[in-house]
Image 1 (cartoon, rainbow, N blue to C red):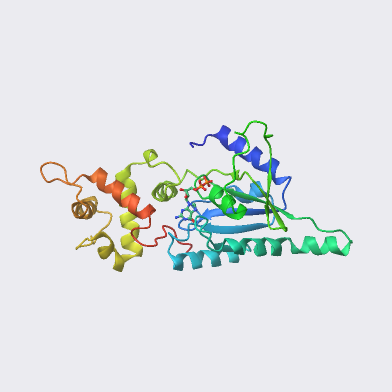
Image 2: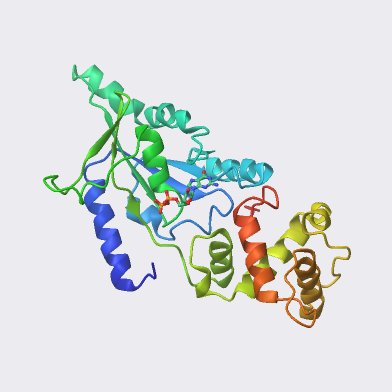
Amino acid sequence: IQWFPGHMTKARRQIEDKLKLIDVVIELLDARIPLSSRNPMVDEILKGKPRLVLLNKNDLADPKATAEWVQYFADQGLPAFPIDAATGTNVKEILPRVKQLWAHKIEAMLRKGINPRAIRALIVGIPNVGKSTLINQLAGKKIAATGDKPGVTKGQQWIKVGTEMDLLDTPGILWPKFEDQMVGMRLAATGAIKEELLHLDEIALFVIKYMVQHYGAGIQERFGVQDLPDDMDNIQEMVKVMEAIGRKRGCIVSGGKVDLDKTSLIIIRDLRAGKMGRISLEKPF
Ligand code: GDP
């Protein structure tokens, strides 16, 4: 999706309609790039609804960086923890944490002699962060899209998560921030935005540079590269690293030259598939 002001206004209105129905928001972020995968207006849009932050795709993220991020959000008064929506890791933790956020309301209802109803929750996040995967995981089955079956009324459906939580079957879709070029790089590197929107070689260079800076010791082994550049802002030195990776991966065109586009694609694909290890591309401090 390419976001224009009109799309953002529409997305915001759709979330605001859903917010009227719900008690607690589950904000889904990408554990590898929590701030870059966060909507810049999320606090304003959610208007103080109780919120749980989930750092998804933690199977691909650096566990040490994730621990720092959990602390970062806790310092802001936001409970946060990592999950893998795809495999279901930690997904069972969600219900108890949502219950904690809503416990004061339930106690108040009980004091008044009212039988508390199930907590109503909504998942929000930018495209590709794993919202549908998490909804299916929480539902314990594949949820059919409500619109495409004849005779099924369109509109909001609730998914029962045990007896204590009802989840809206369609997530709230938020847009990422665009104005910062580094944010764009991180989003493209992790697959949140289409790589066609940026140059492949630029994204691959960004990944290598970040890895050399933050995962120095492991990088030679991960990329099969002998010499690391002293000056990573020196484009010629960086191209040499790319060529070494390309040769190792057999990205050779006629005349023995390295195909840098193909090499870039391999670097990005390997990163996204976790083949270079668990790597985060953003740190809180
Ligand atoms: P949505 O656009 O937010 O609904 O995102 P999807 O649920 O469609 O997920 C986008 C992609 O991320 C899919 O290819 C999922 O399989 C993948 N995905 C979702 N959760 C995880 C996870 O925890 N780990 C990994 N590695 N991939 C995930």
